[in-house]
Figure (cartoon, rainbow, N blue to C red):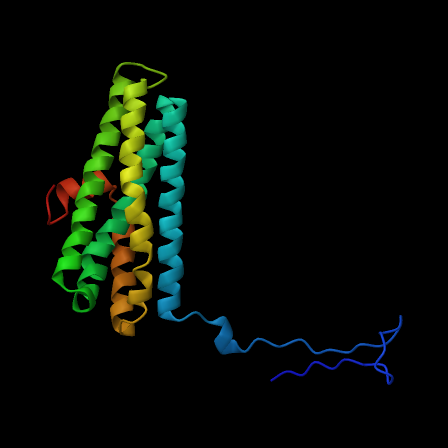
Length: 204
């Protein structure tokens, strides 16, 4: 334990200018500087959800502005970000959480993924129609539908982010397996719609 030493006037009065103060700041211990596997997972998981959150909020703004080129780019970026994330969740994280939550809640998580895949597919179709018709702006009805689809995805992002506190309770080997599966998913780098169409066991 580090010690902080402060010189105090003998009469207990206010400190006078020039009164010496000496202090030794705490020195971080090595073990405090090294993240556990669970902490590393949690930081990684939060960062991925923040990225998806920011893309979704930017997509709402793009629909409000009717900017078809920006909408198309954001949908592509969103699909690329979600694809590997959903893959390692379904292949490693959800099975690891099954003993904690039971089958009903895991089925709900998978159903949320189904809904997100449908929403991203429709968002991609909206962007594609605008491009094929050489439209610089999407119509009001299409923009309203796009915003509705994005808002339907947002609750899953915040709900899913909370799963990290359950992953922290898993054995370290299970967390290592989740992170290793994440590495494989990121190396494959299939966007959401490609993964859902060609690799995912559960079809939508």
